[in-house]
Image 1 (cartoon, rainbow, N blue to C red):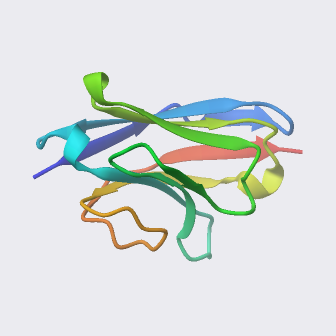
Image 2 (image 1 turned 120 degrees about the horizontal axis):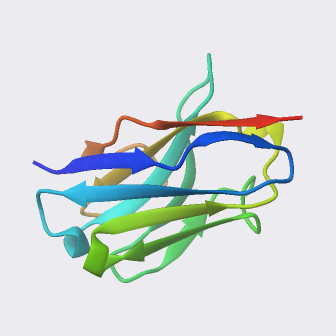
Length: 120
């Protein structure tokens, strides 16, 4: 089994920045594609960003140009740098891992989530 633990969430004013981290344990991190999803109250879980085993990155249109996903295989960690945050970014952010990169919530492993709240 693979365990994913998110950190870095919090309360930030609109226009501010946060950097989320997702630490992986269990299986070799470099074997997994990683993704970030978010879910606001009463909403479906939606795609935010993903990164393949080779480092190719993918973003939802709503965050493109503001967010950046990266990975550090030596640290078994994936990051989500979030800049120019907007109130509509408020959600619980989930880290996910799987063998194949995808924008759908079809990953095999999920973290518990970390709350990001953006005030206006």
